Image (cartoon, rainbow, N blue to C red; front, side, top):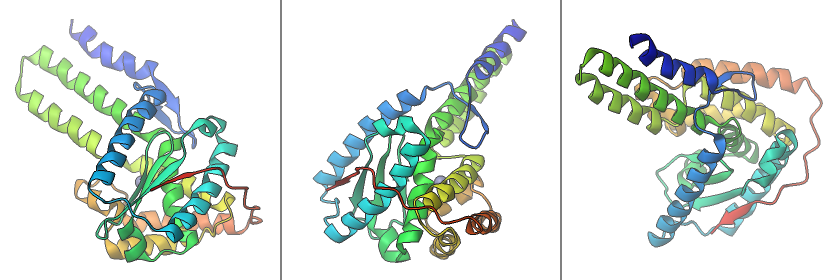
Amino acid sequence: MRRLIFAIPLAMALAACATSPTGRTQLMLVPPDLAINESRMAYEQTLGELTDSGQMLYDPALAGRVGRIVGRLAAVAVQTWPHTAGWEWSVVLIDDPEMVNAWCMAGGRMAIYSGLVNKLDPSDDELAHVLGHEISHAVANHSAEQMSLAILQGLAVAAVELETGDRGTTAAADMLATVALDLPNSRSAEYEADQLGMELAHKAGYEPAAAATLWDKMRAEGGWAGVLQFLSTHPNPDDRAARLAIQADRLRNQLPPRPPEPHPVRIHP
Ligand SMILES: [Zn+2]
């Protein structure tokens, strides 16, 4: 019995592994399509709430700028990963002057907060790195991976509980699962999004060194993933900056690619 209980989560984990775009092994109990479906519903709900609260940002100049940058990034993503051609590439501009943030859900649905634009005053190159990073989380199925880890964690704790009869682990398991879902990404997922994001931005014709200047601004502002640092899942800022600098040096020695024709992107509002 004991062996069987522990064998179930283990077998599920072994049966459901995928390989990320950088070659990392990922636990994938949740099919990426399911994560895309879930995020479509969440996005529509978010758009509705933003409309109701009057928080959609009407700014034609910013909308045009974001549309051009995301269009080029999406074009490279579609060239590199053809399945993303069927994504509903879209960005909502959110009026929230204190929030230094941007995100991209599974399936290419994105958001930018006005705080990121106002507080960081990013160049197009810097903005391309933020958005490239966020798109990379989606392309590498990081939310499906996070959901899978939370499920496995729950199963493992339930197995221990069955075995030991200790109900006290339930509360701990619930908390762990919540933390796993609330945290958008693990540390390795962050490094992966950094690496893929810089490649994406570079191929879309943006300056690799802008990732470092962007990161300096982020760090000064304490924004973006800064809020996650209390849980120590976020990469050490110095380590991250050093990795980005090494990759930027490598890319700088390559010929700058020709920017692609932008892929269609819908901007809300
Ligand atoms: Zn990230």
